[in-house]
Length: 631
Image 1: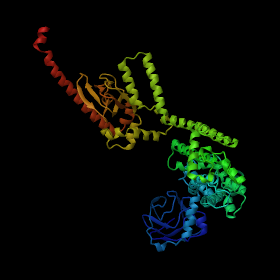
Image 2 (image 1 turned 45 degrees about the vertical axis):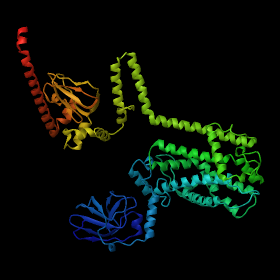
Image 3 (image 1 turned 135 degrees about the horizontal axis):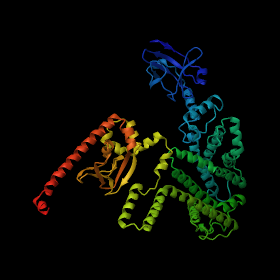
Image 4 (image 1 turned 120 degrees about the vertical axis):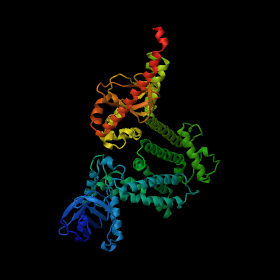
């Protein structure tokens, strides 16, 4: 677009432009150095398109933003977005949009696939794939359907977790605990009114399920065809959801139906929602992923929900035999529930809280294997119910125990493997008859190196890219970078390249790191600890601590011989830079090479001075009269 200074352009809002994602330009102003474009909305696929008025011909596309912005500043050539800011034009220059149109657009965005969904990148491997699926939903099919990886689906399913669980708890509580005094009466209770609200929410959930796409496996295409979505839901869960969501019991009670058998079946129908427990748990796992990616937290919350729901349902199941008799025959049988100690009183005369506490207590007793022996059971059907509860409690105990063992080994696997390694080391030292002092040094080395957590560093880093490995190295050696004056002012690229060649080593107290006179094939950087430097004559020159380095003098000398010995004073962790890497990276960098050369010459000078001072002090002793007489 060839635009002169002060040129203005205007486009009017149209359905064609909105439906096909073209940006609507209003009062665009162009100057010599920059271009400001003020507009009302962005493209639905997250791109900004600059178009001409005639035919809406697209001239440029920009991918730098994904939401509505008001002012774009381009470079002089107009091919790159420089900045995004608020609108600098007066409000009168912008078209007025109805609030309901803005609301509809925001709701429509909630129905599209979102990169903020915690599982979206488990299915789509990249952001362009997310954008492509969003375009497919808008332009090809499923325009009004809900994407399974949309924010609306995430929020709605999270709310339905609470609604479905509460629905199951209240339905079972209404059936087994809330009983009218004999004779059986048709009366609407407070629980029925509350359940009516949950039934309504579940009916809306059925409508939402009929409008939500699905995917079979990760990597497969998301099915957004309305007919396929509806047919799949009808074949699978539509009947169960519909039967458990219809407020039939409320209708019968409202119509004052006297046949209690119909009321019993109506109260049992909402319990079909229990069949959807695995779907509820899957939605719970997805919701928890928003807050944490820890497998332990996800599994723990999942098993906690199962345990609490099981406790409630089993406490209700304890009363199912007399409750069925109550609704079916209109009387409360005797001989049941001996743990209540009713003393010829009716079940309805005992407060609900007491009955519920007793039922929960019996379940926990079954969970710990003591329920059947706690009270006498006389009726065959009650024996069967109690046996089922004990069997379920035993199976769940095994299931929960396996999970806890898995969590334990997941959490403490590295510690367990470390102790296994130390057992092998101790057996090896016992077999080779190590002296106690050497055993202590070996154990100290392993404790310092692993910190009681066994891991294979090379195996953990092999799968990472080179850039990510460099970042890990930079983060590992950040103390070294901060304390080493050698790296001050150097670019991050140079520092990262040098640190990527370092190899960690650990020395115990009194370990000889380098020996004077040996051929030098590397230099060292001290990460943690203290070393002492000695000259050729054995004179202590200095102590080096965190961030210091040594061994570079031999790499700069022609004969490559060490001019000093270095001994560890305490447990010291150093990073080793081999001679080949030193010549390739350090010698080729002029600034770094000059710093090392200056420092090496200073150390050489100090070492020579100390050696000469030591000679001058020891020479008079050698030339004393006592030595002469002896000779």
